[in-house]
Amino acid sequence: MLTVCSESTSWLGRRAETIKKFLIIVEERGSGYSAFSPDVPGCGSTGKTKDEVERNTQEAIEFHLEGLRLEGYEVPEPTTYSSYIDIAV
Image 1 (spheres, rainbow, N blue to C red):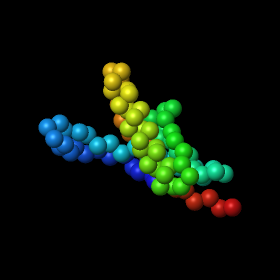
Image 2: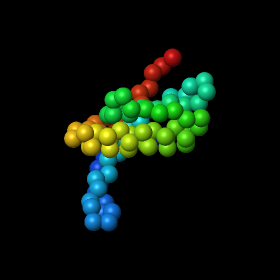
Image 3: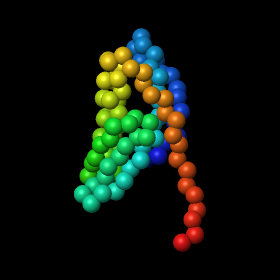
Image 4: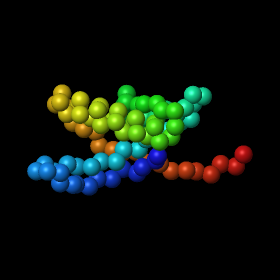
């Protein structure tokens, strides 16, 4: 799943949460898929299917960002985007 970064705010209970979209890069591997986000260095995941790797990567990023918050670090801003170019072969 390739997502251009964007931001919106939703109210959940009494607390406002900012929703940020992070680009993930999904690669097919011999035994399934792996994925990572260029905006969240050191965080990635794997899965046997595309759906599984996307779910696992979302959970991994959420867990990673929560750890950053608990340690007092800023949550990184999503800045990457996807684009395709045509190459004659």
